[in-house]
Image (cartoon, rainbow, N blue to C red; front, side, top):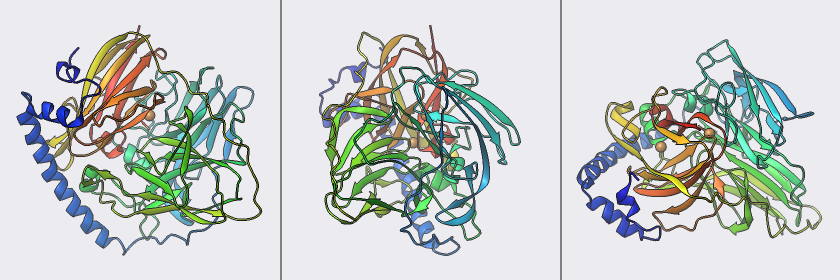
Length: 502
Ligand code: C2O
Ligand code: CU
Ligand code: CU
């Protein structure tokens, strides 16, 4: 094991003693110096972001008044075991009720919702009508990363097309996933530009709900001429936050419901960098799935936190008529505002009206999958760090001290084994850690949190903290990536490779 220092800390060790131990170790001095430099750098970011928002009111496209009813992207279903679709990535979509030169697939942002069943074959012809390279990633799908499947190393040049062929395993969980470009260096611009879409793995009706809807949340900033605002390196360091937060490309849409009637909301955080801390006025939130897999039982809380890339399936059953705002509160990343987002944002309004009905009660048990058991074949520690360096704006974004190199194997894993990884964030900012292809279960963290026991594919690692993941590399040999899902950080190099083979 490469991590004697972390191994010495029990999974029930208190955060304070862990922090003290880590700060007090032999590398503590370098660590705190880097920390101090990082904080100084972020202070500058914060000030810069503040100035930007003062300037924002001029030169911006004003969104149409909210309140239109929520539209859902076109659904493309598989037929007889195959979903065949051409996705044209190009500028020119309607966003927030306005004609813009933002980006979309087949003229819309989000692009069409792709709905497949376990065992299906997904054939996507990606047509690049952008002026820069792109590619396509099926976020969260447990599918091969090799060849022309979910391969993040593919580059599709402007004017070119690429045929993806992705086989969905017959035992794939049913749930909410999404797709987006993943070309290193342009991922943040393209997702912020609007290139996102939902992907649902369906096993037929599962929930006693009246409506089952997709809500893809994006953020962007539109200039008066309809173009997407360019962002400076300060915004990239903090992780850009758009001034408009949209649901299915709409500005503050309204979702109609009847009292007593349940709806399933499949919420995708497709923002390039923004953490969504969601609450619904007048309601508690009942969650049935996270990152595309069912929880063991519905959970109820006041708030659901979605890092960029995360999904939550909520079941909303309003009891009383009225209008209730779905709000994203500012997320406190350890006292450091990410991108200067400091005010609550209304995403949508739940409009409850009409005669009351009564949906059947939710099942008390859900078809969750058991956590991977078995011997732990290897333990690894990965460190996410920011520092002063050669990176953008004089700041570096690294994993284990290195920036992304597609030709280097950073982790080599034996197919068929179970591993435990400690993801350490030594930086003063939160980083959402994401691993392709192989889902993980958080089994412990430095805050002493209660593990959910279910698999996920993005975990938010707060500043100066760690999470411990259990990962089953039971299928899908090949090479893929893990990275920070603040896509600006990923583009800056906070990404690395993993090779899994027998
Ligand atoms: Cu949603 Cu590697 O990405
Ligand atoms: Cu992914
Ligand atoms: Cu990050």
